[in-house]
Image 1 (cartoon, one colour):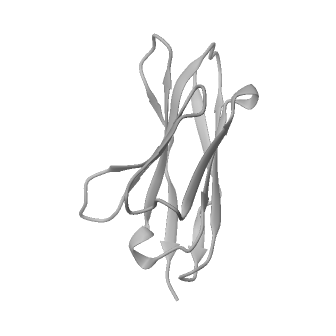
Image 2 (tube, helix red, strand yellow; image 1 turned 180 degrees about the vertical axis):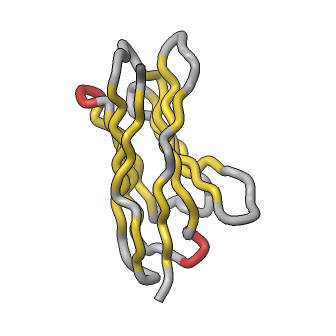
Length: 116
């Protein structure tokens, strides 16, 4: 059974920083891609950032130059460093992994609220 355990969400003031973590536990031989998505109230879930097995990253235009995704493949863990946070970054953030030759998995979500 594969589980994704997310942590690091919370309340932060505009301009502040947060770091999200997502650890994948269970039987995993290889993970092709790890990513973070977010969903704000009344909006569709959107891709925030992704990182492929050999380190290639992609970012949504709205977070480029503010967020950094990284992974520790030995620990099956993905991180999202979020700097210069804005109110529009408020959302539930979901971890997503795409293992090789297996269906993808989702985390339970962690709330990020940016407010003064």
